Length: 65
Image (tube, rainbow, N blue to C red):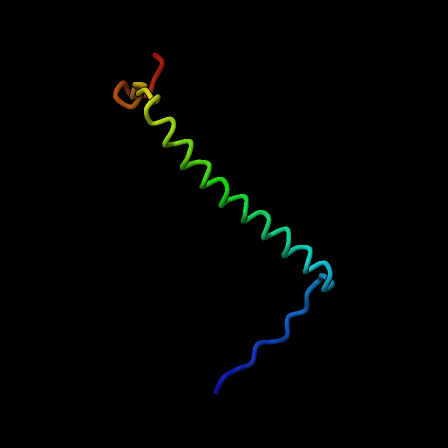
């Protein structure tokens, strides 16, 4: 036997749901653009990247004394 889920009522009107869907799609498209930009930027900066040595404070007990 299967139980039917109760009907979900939305606090939004159909028009508001459409607008929210459009906004959500826009936000997701920004993530795709960021990934493209990141890959282009990372390829361009790999040649210019320098390594920086960061001291490990845990070796000294993490104390300033």
